[in-house]
Figure 1 (cartoon, rainbow, N blue to C red):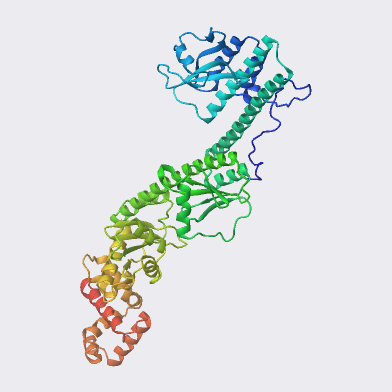
Figure 2: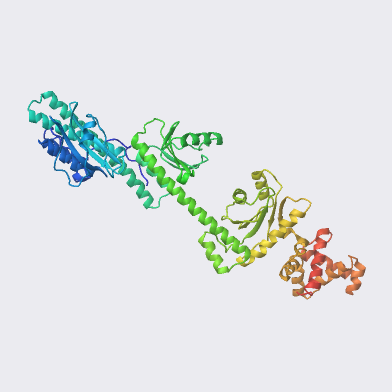
Length: 586
């Protein structure tokens, strides 16, 4: 809902009534194009006309008793008039009604009070009075006591009936004075004004219900609810999470930057608001808590520094809070379902699953498996793989890329993410969040398709294990950087060995294949002879200068420093694997 807000909720709705009060002069009508039934849903305005034009007191009571059921789930059980002989039951009201004991009515002593009737839990005798004198009773029953609106409507009916009885009595006696007529008219007008006020109140409440119902029907979220509340009340409306962070604002004077309360002040505010029912004023705000099923999901508030909010404003805030609670609960349930589906997906990917199914399931949860991914395994001693640790890992790995798929395996958290972690950045973020650097992270090589995820998972586990068993057990280890350690662990297959050989000898193998040279063989014999030029030249049956030339070409083509100890080790292992395990295949 957008646009400028409507006028602030008011106790009166102008220019909507078609009513001519008795005693008003011609031409003082207020016109309303709607039918009278819409303006007078309980029929009290029509009844008032009938009551005040009726001269027979018994008929007045019968008219009032017939109207009781139109006010709500009530039933008129009996009616009485005061006569010279005491209370006299009014005849002619519905047959079969439970019998009211006349003795009970006498025992009331002209006061209102409860009477006993079978099968009805609430029974009340309403006294009909005029000029301080008891004129009669109407006995009303129901299966449950009336609410505030029901009390008002029943009281209005009793007041109108009492006024009509008084008027009929004075007409009959013909001793009514001018002052008494004024008093009766005042009573009548007061009752009508109260009825008009009630009608206006109900109209405004119906407006709130219809507005919020339209928001819900259109699928509007918390922003639409906030905007609707602003338009209904004319006060700036806002939604915060339980920690005081702003989620939505509608209306003028939004603070920038938005102030954040300390955790202590936020908890104190929540405690104060929780102790009271309904919206609560806290400083310059009216606050209502969205707590479906007792879980605090959000805070809805109205900015009211001028203390202008009235009963209708409180009503709108309370009903907007209920709509917000339903919306936030719905969002939580959707999030939980999505989280469960995402965890099931990564669990299946780690074990190996059908590629077509994996792509379809990933698309359903908004994840693109067509992109390159990495498997990341995180272990932090003293932090079991619970929800809080999982959330910390997810936040530490959050980048501009799509959300990672994340799951738990024992005391490990496993992620499938598009973004390759930057060196020790993730480790540093987790160390800061968890308060200790004593944790390890393993990262796989790149994975280009779902069927490669199980292999990358094993790579990440091996990288993690190497890190944990190294002298510096905390930090991040990338499988790409393991070198010789990549082929020393269990479970190696020919493809992994070939990958290691291609990493270290690929350029030389390709050069030999393209130029019919033997640079890989030369390097292998050179290492076999312990780096001795004479022995290697003799083994290759070439001149020493030829060997020197070939080694120089090997340096240039492979871009490897043969003087570096780690490089020599990896190259020597690679040549051994190439020659012995791979049988010198090119």
